[in-house]
Length: 391
Ligand SMILES: O=C(O)CCC(=O)C(=O)O
Ligand SMILES: [Fe+2]
Image 1 (cartoon, helix red, strand yellow):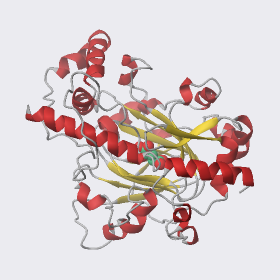
Image 2 (image 1 turned 90 degrees about the vertical axis):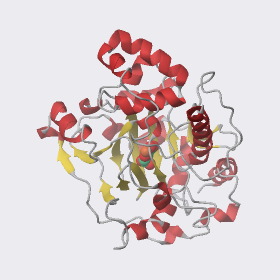
Image 3 (image 1 turned 180 degrees about the vertical axis):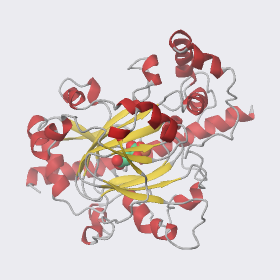
């Protein structure tokens, strides 16, 4: 790393992971372990988008909530030419991108030129991950939007109805150094996701929604300072999933995602990701008419203000779904869960007035580097929900 990069990285590391001392970034020597960034499993079904219509995809994969890797869905994206590391380094050289959050939940940003130097030249156990959701609102960074299109399979996007400024964050542009990743989680608000890989390789493990979180989540005793990192999961939990004693009803679906492939993660599924080499990807979460009942329940509970606006817009634009909300019991807990319930009591006291404010504004995608704030925000949301349920 060049000395300017080193200087910027030291400062960013301190802000993004204040719990780690300088030498602790490399304490496990994962850089020297090729095993964790290798994988020969291929347990997620693959399909070829050229032979499957949107309607077939919805009936065969989205409605039955089947994780699947889709080939040839994004072959015509300009991103394959535009998002090479060299071109990104030139076009966005001095633009600052989010690589984490500080202890107050504020974005920690780094210029592209420093991040790319760091990405290819660090020995960190779980490197910083560039994970940017606000590129659409930025004069220069918004050019990224021209380089891809939402695939037809996923083009129903009901949160659009509430407006760009009111809707929860929904798209992330990501550059992941080797060994960076996303710890085990379920995506927010019951939404489903697609994740399109432009370059590099991602190792995925996916588990059914019913899998108990206690089985899947590393604890502080597993790894005091790194329990939420993707690589920690692969080191600590993954080996257990491969034993004959692992419960058969919670199968681990493991696969490598190759460049050009899109993975579909249905709402409610647990997933964990490790970047096996330097990756460039874009991912979006969505609410469609298929996952609407679950998402509606989650929105009413954790974003009451937004749910009112959403219903108002649905009445005009999707009266069928607006009518459906009358039949959904938002207190019914049998539906897919979130990964929010926790025995941890680390969150500060949350007030119990779910109708006065939306509670989960802090709920976001749990990248390794902002997982802590996701947990914090989420914890308080859960507490508030529990309080409101008891009332
Ligand atoms: O690191 C990744 O590519 C996975 C991201 C993910 O699952 C998420 O953002 O919810
Ligand atoms: Fe996710």
